[in-house]
Structure formats: structure tokens, C-alpha cells
Length: 159
Length: 90
Image (cartoon, rainbow over all chains, first blue to last red; front, side, top):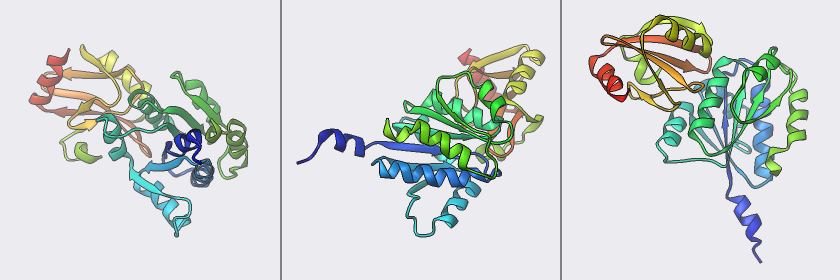
């Protein structure tokens, strides 16, 4: 017997918008989030620049976690042109450009928006966000554990 | 920079924040318009925190351009057709 609620949930998708990969925790937290989303039956799609995507591809050579991975500009084109959208959107932020991308996703997509904020100046970034979203933030640069803890507390995959 | 990269652009501000670019446009240009994120300029969807300020100065279009690793640039490109298109939108 098919549980319709479960079936509906399994069709959900999430977009992970990666930022500049210069802060080490991004790749680790992205793979962890992909894992949790897949466990919850949510299809993760990753978007980023070539370096950010390549870091994931090399870390996950058999693609056990990583599924569809797209160029960031391309996915923004698709959403803006109403060719595609997602149920959840996670934007990784450690600089001002990340805030601009998150605001853009909030404006063009119908997805429930989460920001994942990290880096030395994470608190200043949180203070600069004035658009509707849920912030998941921690001072994390090399050690992903503070950010993982915040992510586990929010558990966006369970919503 | 995609399509933008192939344009003969001049960088007015480099490595600034998005807000600094918006403030610069409002302070230094008389003819401005506001667009929403995803609006196309030179066939590229503009990234930013709304409202995004864009300026017109004769045939020049001045607009912010954001890349994940490089922050926001304020670019100036001479293109009469694009300036006219944006001017009609006001």
C-alpha cells in the first residue's frame, strides 16, 4: 500500500546553492546536507561554480551522495524563466556575494529559503540579511561541527 | 562572466559590497531605475538584494554584476540599444 503523504514527500526537491569554496566547511556541510536530504526522500540538486562543484565530485567519486550538479548561472536562468523550481533552497554564504545570491533566490524561486552562514564574520552576515528566510549560522571555518550542530537543530529535511 | 565578459565593460567599483554599489549609483547618477533580481541586462540575469539600482548615462548602462568568489562589481557598458530598452521600461 502506498502512503500518499510519503509519496508526495519523496517527490520533493532541494537546491543547494554553493558559494565560493574558499572556506573549507562548505564542501563538508554540503555533502552532509545532501546525505540528510536523500535520507528524507528529498532529491538534492547542487548549483555552484566549477571549483565548488569539482570539490564535491572529487570527494564523492562514485556519486554516492552527489546527484545532479549544475552551473550556478544556468540554474538561475532556468528558475527565472520558470522552467524549473524547487521545494527547498539552501544558499551557502560566507561573503557579501552569498547574500546577493540568497536574496535573488528568495525573489525568483518559490522554494522555502534557508541560508547556511559560516566563516569568521558570520554574525555580521546574519545582521545584514533583511529578506524572509531561515538562517542556519555558526562560526565555522575549518571545523564543520558547529555548523553541523545548528543544521541538525533546525533539521530542514524534516519539515 | 558569461555574456557580460564578452562586452567592452569598464569597472567602476571592484570588490565592494552590493550595498556600496547601490549607494554609488544613487549618489553619482541622475538617471536611475530599480529592477528586481533575475531581471535581464545584456542577456544576463542580474543578481542582488532588491531593489537593484541601475543607472543610465547617455548610451552607457551602469549596473552591478555579482560572482560568488569575486563579490560585486559595478560595470559601465556603452550600448545604445540596451540603454534605450531600459529607458523605455522606466
